[in-house]
Length: 481
Image 1 (tube, rainbow, N blue to C red):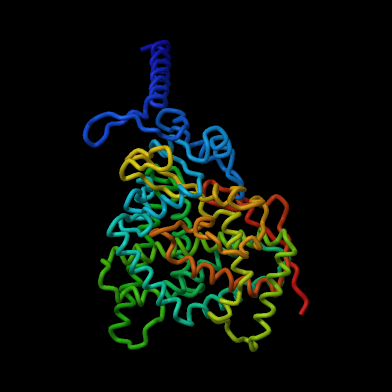
Image 2: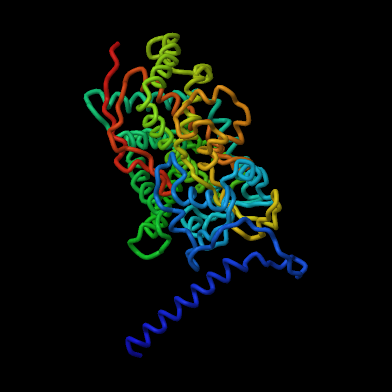
């Protein structure tokens, strides 16, 4: 076949694809009910975009995480806060509406169900709490809540958090500037491996896990092609190595426990006593804990440092609060849960950073049946994306939404609908309170010892995962004693 014949096939294929796209876009609203009869459903307005890919590339285009991005701006302006699209190879309803988002999160496993793309399952594993659904998710979540409640009650947890925070800050003693994104990740990793596996930062196994974990994280947000050498393939291999390391630690712990009455006081020790989990589920549980405790906590810390670094008024009130708490402590006396409960303004700063910075932009759900909401229908089987950042940055929900203002949280009115940084309903992140404790205790010592300036050009970028492209470099100024 000559060049003209090949060109003709390509052109014909493109024309057919374009026509199919137009047909789907205009006539998709005709569906068959379960009884086989046809009916016209009022589906939200929108467009499916290109065949197969739909509008996925435009939806995922990077933008500052404290904005909703061009895609959502244009679509909300054209179609309203709820619209249809074709994303992640599926017809999709996108919700930027506060009430619909809340409705979706509160009807997990009734009308909607967690539905992450299959490649994510390939990295996280089939029994991961993050992708499990139905009764399996309920069982795993109940175990998680029980374990976290036990950890919270132990003074060792908050003592370790404070000790590791001080170690990071002491390493800055002779530094004029630091890359805070890396520092926050190191701190959160040190905390999570200590709490979950009982490992210290100097332990060789910590370095091994961190190296594999970074490869795992890069693959989690990469193009899902399992070809040797690709980030996705490396991530799957890294997960296998991490699992092997965790299994080895578990076996070593069991051998020591058989001949030693002195047990470690960590997450793993408690987990080993849980009879309702299989061995693979326990390993997956540890991996989920590392993932949740590492990425989201470090990002929240970086968000706060970025936003507070641009507001001397916020920094002043934060310092005043922590100076007052510090004045009640003896030298080298640890902070307590009672101290944490006194950090009222700190909680407002954390809430505002979660709202304005948007650690998690959206989550994946699918409709289990035709769902009627207001004057439209979400068809069964369609993907549903509740966009948290759109509600967080909606000026009708949060006045002056594009301004960092912790004082807006003086009132807790409808906070569960206005702020959903960790999801909601039965899939709300079980460890969110532990993350907030880590951040609050780090801030306690940071604001008492330092002032800082954010280097020009820095900012959180949503890819849709959030990252500080330049590492969040800050210039340090030590406070006078």
